[in-house]
Image: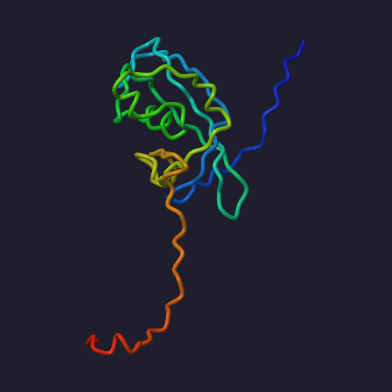
Length: 162
């Protein structure tokens, strides 16, 4: 009996320009480390997050990011930045008391991701990487600049030098 395998056509990867993008978490996978690395040991579980990235003026794209799960609530941890950005934990409370939360509650939630376009180390190939996460509420609102108002001098202002 023949084994048939279907491969999709090659997909051209175009890195996104450096900037802030709205990310929506669409899938979480557990990945068991098969060997020791600089930051994890064989058997450790890493998380692979799949994101839908809103690209202004274009179709949404998908990106992935990987995280080790820290033992404590450390503000230096990228994983902690994600769970705070998605609103799964309250930072002030977790810093004091630690936290327990449902990671799957983050599915479908959104945050702001900072994506950086860069050269892949040792090659001439451009890639992009999600390097930071912020809650949607942190995103600066568009500034509204009021139209300048004409200056008028009223009689009671006549003694104020300009």
